Image 1 (cartoon, rainbow, N blue to C red):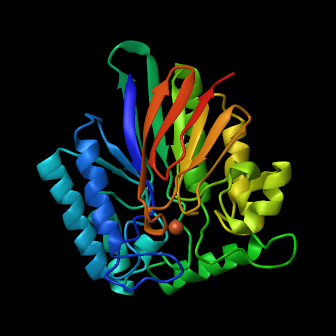
Image 2 (image 1 turned 180 degrees about the vertical axis):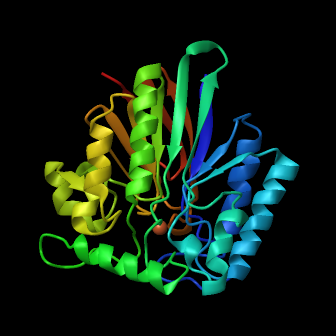
Image 3 (image 1 turned 45 degrees about the horizontal axis):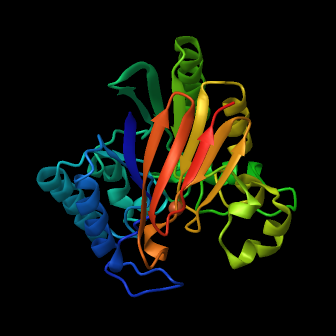
Length: 306
Ligand SMILES: [Fe+2]
């Protein structure tokens, strides 16, 4: 059996609550989750990004917490970079990768094998959706590149997509395409992970803003709404070309969501910072299924691949 734990959007900060986000409470929720997960014997926790709200001091506090969990509870981390992770002083932005044990440009892959079934093998392709963005830019030239990209990916209503998302570079898309090609050939399943979600069925959305859409269960493409990866349509087109892709795991939009499209389960995990009763999940990967066992406010899902 392959079973790991997942959580998203801790957004810790030594800051007062705003818009339903209780930044300080994330530490208590983190410790509770990690304590429970440490008893579950999982190989890693997938942290889907936005570990802190802002500021280097909060980033350092989270680094210490990740270390404590590693040292004292035996937790291994697989970090995904989120937009808030780059909300630090300009001179600190280049250090964000290292603080999370990553190397720039921040995308990577790893595989997980089922110890009881050699044919159940999964590859995780972890994207950096912040790669080209105004907030992760380290130089004026990088910032200009991001501003131009945002302009190029204007929405159909003429508005610019939200600045707190970013663009996945051509180099990263090519890397993804090469990796997916190899996985198609080797017959392994793939879970693509990014901080930024692509797709959901509107019925799965747990939010006042989406109540009307939920009545008719619409397809929701987050990038068309300007609230996710600017070139999400390009990313989705690549996923569509590869039958190895079975799951797309994300965070970012704290209400969470779920939807199956083209035999891929799109799972957006609820954000810890905005979920008073806490949230995390265990995820089981089978050769022909993905099962999300949600804890606290995190819903559970099960999808069997066609
Ligand atoms: Fe985010």
